[in-house]
Structures are given as structure tokens and as C-alpha cells.
Length: 151
Image (tube, rainbow, N blue to C red; front, side, top):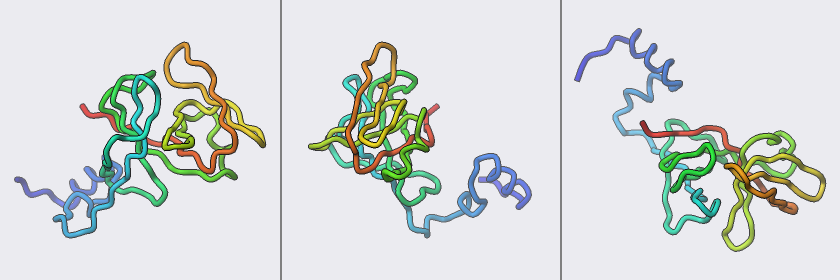
């Protein structure tokens, strides 16, 4: 344990991208968690077998997370992918971004959104050699915004 001056506390908080208060909170505040809605593995994105959450420093409303159980494309086992959910009117803003798309019966697709028209979305799965996937009118998508990789 060390005593840190306010100046150093502010510098550390700025480097980490958090508020200084987040570094000294004694746990009295409410902890917010992101629900893990999918697990990315060898066979693609699937629903988790058990309920789990990740704890971000400061989540926003409408965020969800994906945990990676097996390396796939640029993602490694143990990674957490934080995503922001987007309704249909915001799909165009997700072009050329990695997105999670819900499918019926608790299934998901995860990949790069390469095209969008009025009827469907076209995705390329992560990694080499994957076939393009087409999804018709999903109710929402989740755009990958942050990758958390353990050291």
C-alpha cells in the first residue's frame, strides 16, 4: 500500500481511461456487469452453456459481451469482446466492423459486416477461408467496440 498524490492519481486514471474516483472506490458503489450472450469458438459464435458476466470498468447501457473459448481469426482464447447493441436503423454504421448477429433458437453469427441492404446482412466469419453468411432482417446486432485480452 502506498499513498498517492492527487496529481499522480489523475495521471494514472487518464492513462487507464477511467475517472480517478474509479481507482479509489472502496467497493461501496453498485457494480455493473455485462452479460455474456455468446461464446466464440471453433464452430463460430454459440450461446453460453451457463450464465456468466464480465465486469467492465464503466459499462454503458445496451452493452453485451462475447467471451472467446478457442482462437478464431484475430481473436484468442480468453479474450473478451465488448459490444454495443444497435437497432436496425443503425446497421449501416457497422459496415466493415465485427458484429454479433442473433439467430433463432439462441444461436448467433459473428463476423465482419461487409454489406447491408433493405432485406439482409452479409457477414464474413473471422479467420481465413470462411464462407460468407447471409442473415435476413435481424432485430438487432452488437458491434464489437472493445477487445479485452489478458496479459
